[in-house]
Length: 535
View 1 (spheres, rainbow, N blue to C red):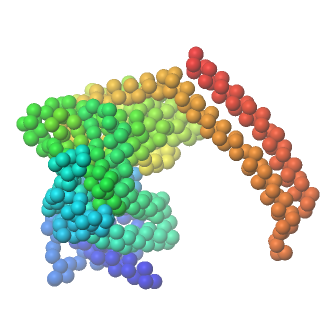
View 2 (cartoon, rainbow, N blue to C red; view 1 turned 180 degrees about the vertical axis):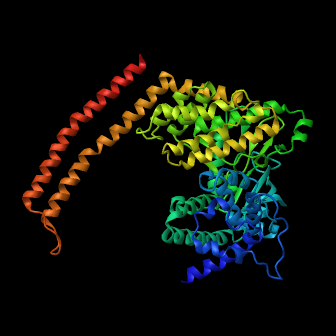
View 3 (cartoon, helix red, strand yellow; view 1 turned 60 degrees about the horizontal axis):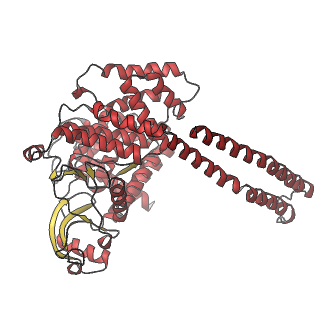
């Protein structure tokens, strides 16, 4: 009851802010809400005399919602950013509007930041840095300071670094708001069946998992470090180096990035940077990370990118990252290349081979649906063609063929839309497909190479060998369990007759006998595959 009262109080305040912005319940979601919620909508729009009117309630539903969420603070800003990645839940148009949600808040004091640094690292700020600036950027979860390390054996003058510090009390604030979100999700799912298709509890849990990662700056530092290793030999893109000695759960220190913000196109052009090349660079870097590494920066907008003096893109803010497995990488590469070459049958086959579309559906009907997406883009100017929007249309069509929502692909699609926006910011006439084709083709050629096929077959053999090596132990445990059930059962339990236990044991022995030939057969098949690949 106490939890319910707390949640109702917090949510009432949020509802009133949303109501005053005419953004309490977007039309796309009203059909999914219980009637009692809809009956209360007019009450939420009432403004008391002591309440300030909203500054701006013009614009689309999504724009008003973005303004209201920003007014509600950190937890709701993150909720809006998360919903922007899920057009499958809130609709494409609303998700697109929420991408404009700015994650900017007033900074907290430098004295508080210094105290957090000292507590996290366990040393006075003066023992860590020779200089520590006022805040230079502040967002919903953390703010950034410029600092300079003390001289050491390698750097006699110290190094310029950026120090990211979590907001005071942010963990408590998020925990309270997330608990309220869970309370609403649980009640909606329990009492209103039509909304269950949206899987509200699962949505809130995904948000909670994402926020949990962002609340531990060591995890963001690890993501940045992994990206730096992955791109160490890449031309045109890099990630800053982490200073692990000055990094803790609530503090992260990284190299200071000297460069021009990607958002400042005029400054980039004035500095002599090749804008056409930068547009190509951002697309090819993103696709390389997604396909080669299966690990990509999922928030790569202009505000998180800089261009250094060498013309390299330098990314910051690794709080939101995406991962895709080998199957998803192949799926992405082949469907995009299939659309480029207009091979819709092959694109359809990939969906079936990956198990995304049930075999009960017609491959030819699906290929026809894909053609309806691909053909309209040919003959259009480069400005009008978007891979991200094509993927969005693709996911809408695949729903008609019972393809289940795959959050990792939705995040990939959303990131691609953002990256395309950056590319066209650099070069309005940038041809996305021309930039993507060599990366997609090179990846597929590499995956089809004999060496790669041998490595994959060997990995499969090793995995099967490990699984089979545990088989005798599994059978022994099953036999012992059967005998224990027969001999050591509580008085209230159901005793298995000794003859039944013996029958179970004999059955396990027979299965073991069957398994051994199967093991040798599997090894023989994999050996043959290896030989074929070598030839």
